[in-house]
Length: 441
Image (tube, rainbow, N blue to C red; front, side):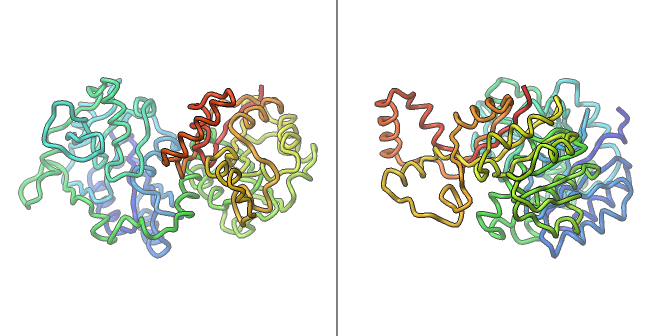
């Protein structure tokens, strides 16, 4: 691969001046394609978008929430059309002269995870001053990775050290040699004086210094949970879809995120309360306000070219979830899929409420007025099987794990008494939601 075809990814937050410095210094030496993953607030992201527009071959992808460094990288790694080496740079990196990328590309051999600034951390992701038994940590401030190898390991996470999970996995698998440190890069990053640097200047946590925080307290718990759920849904969608159809239309921001990731994708939505403003904002190409149970076979046939049907908390609100899936099954292409978000009725909190008689209805959740069906992990799988689908992937969304020792012991004892595997029952009681991907049998 030619050096100047290596794609570059950077995650930004509330820092137009940092992105200006990064792009101007990088463009002074390289013409590589750049993607900026942005999670800035309304008062900042337009300025960052304007900065990006001034430079050729710079793509700006904005999220309506602080996506954070780790999930931002993970989204890019899983959703952008990347192959071969990929360069990741912090938004507060400044390029002093050409040559660093050539050196990194020469060091990155086939089969390696990546090269860059490597130091040692403990299993919590915190720096340590010893090497024996420590985890080799590849800093995402400046790293060149083989994307095909990176995708075989866990993705970065929301953490002060976002590469902790993949580095821990490499460490525990005895594959730490897939990461290689570069001395000059470490020297550049640790040089806090005005002395001579080799290629780069990096002011650690520049985004934090300029914005005041990572924005953790800017969003309510519900907003953060919705944002994380959107990201998880996107990881299950097919790459480069031509048409996505959402039934339920519960989160207009999902449509926007999908369109920003793949502008050529047609995004359609149907549901009782779709966000009509999302059409004007370019998120949805078409909206169908309706009760989804009233959609007939002809409607689904008309949309038979859909690459993925997204059921956003739709099955549990349907009068006939099996019939709804059966209608999709009649028209779905053999290579298409269904992605569903389904609350877990077996959650330990719900079990406790039933045991104590606390069955008061609420505005949301399993006891909300719109809830018509309850599902557990086992009945979800059976529902799809009976409708002619095979579940190929699933993600539990655990927001409130059972941590009370007495309640956990009681749950295990009860299920064991009934002849049920107590450990399986305990694990099935943890998720608040399940994300399911299914394909036609």
